[in-house]
Length: 256
Image (cartoon, rainbow, N blue to C red; front, side, top):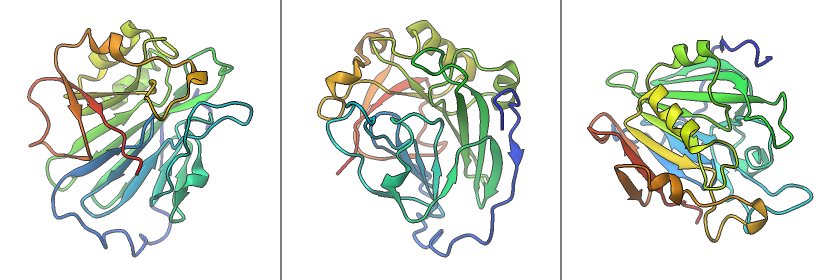
């Protein structure tokens, strides 16, 4: 689908849900969020559905990472755009269904909606489609809405902003080199979607990111924020665990 058509296409789940989905149900703990460095995450619903987003790899002619992305089992894989630091599908095991285009689907208590917009201009990315992904879990009770921006431009198409509305958790790229977005653009995304939690991604992480990437840390942007928490280990997201005031969560990557 062209990014000029921002509305997602509703589709049913293709075939019956895999028998492994729900086998490891988590008993009402909320949506589990695990950070896998750079822009990559693994999310697990209460029913045991595993969603991987944006696994990374090194480019064919250079080095951005000092180690390989861990083999990770998932049921769904979402690739927000076709750049090496977001598209290492071969590192995701379990024969996942791969999502690369705008769509809307519902499976159990999870709704996935992805909107086609454009990558930040520059970086040889002119005309590159980027997906903004919204995952809504807990549809049977009090839902939690997570938005992953990929490497989206600021601002997105107005129709996309209106369709998304507010979210509970926003995943946004930011680093001190302003590789993708300026600090003001990052803050603009936060004002736009009014999340309770903001997770910065796509910045230099010692021991994972290579100097050749030219990415900086996120320290300069973090210093501008009023409430910053360092979060180790996976977190379970539910209305009860979300903060009353907006916070920045600097998550520790879990690769081992």
